[in-house]
Image (tube, rainbow, N blue to C red):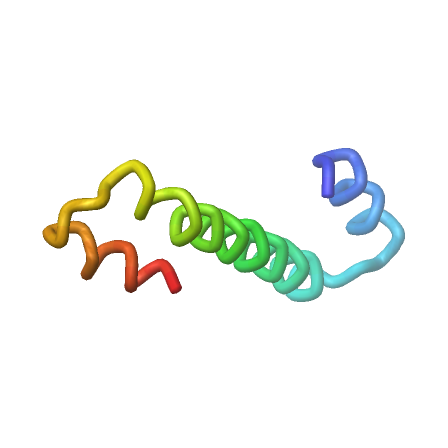
Length: 59
């Protein structure tokens, strides 16, 4: 949600708690997508067994 949308939502009565919950949900979604990408690409970039624990943590 762009900053202007947050300001507008707050100005029209959306509670700060709802705005924070929405932002937190977006962060979780983005971070999960990042970890999915890491889990898919890192085994190719870091094939060493030393990386298996880190790669598994992304799953």
